[in-house]
Length: 407
Image (cartoon, rainbow, N blue to C red):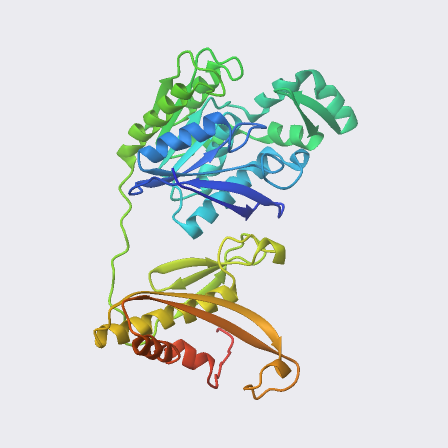
């Protein structure tokens, strides 16, 4: 399955590592997957469930919570509340770059977080929990022998699945305050509850409590003989196939945006902050949506091209289009045009043809590759035509930018 890897900003501003697994063919829906306590997006269960879902046409976004996997931050500073907030931010990010998740899937404590976050993700049409506790405080049983020390000292290192983690008093207070069953009662979404009756980490009684609190439509599937982490590959695939078959009733295939003719007047470009990361912007041009951002080295999250990248892209696209129009009109055997551009600063004294003679000036380098059985004269003429593209003319002519405040 093809996978896009990127980062988005969590509630504390740290970059959270994410992976979007995509089907090879048409996408039926997008899903958001929340992993178990102290696990990560790349556990065997998470990866295998995601892979099997993509085979059914469902794209899956999975990410590491704060301080886990490849995500930044300190795990000790995370809480159940921050996990819920990060799930909402993940859904927002997916909405910005693709489409909001229609399916919410949570494993173990991630299942409890998904139930709590669902109300803040309005596009979600179906919710799935796998071995989820009915009370978030259930997770404290994993380090019950250290609860007193955590209360006394405020922060203690515990061993979970053979790995050390620091747990703070704030985490205990936070999970104790959540009334998850109230969220379940107000869910108002189709709910699939999956639980193994032999799970020795989260008992079957949790599934019973969630099922009784939920309103219809609700379904329960017994994962007989499966362990809590779904370590067996065939078990994970079985779970994913069940999710895909169950959710299909509540989903409709995504429809592609219709291609519309360009209006005579230029379309407005709307740019607005997304709130995810320091610099990320949503760029809206008619029916088209894309992201702009800055590289991580510049303080951004690198979820989209930067402003100068977009500028170079506009010049490159205009160049290739103009050359294509000319070649088609003259019936030239032009097969393909490729344009490579870079932007930088040079000393004005290094540019003999420039009017500016002091300080630094901007320089765009444009390299054009022309493919096809063209003679030298035809190639030279196409290179001349490149400079006649409208964007090139705009950039090299006097430009007036009028700025005013919105009412």
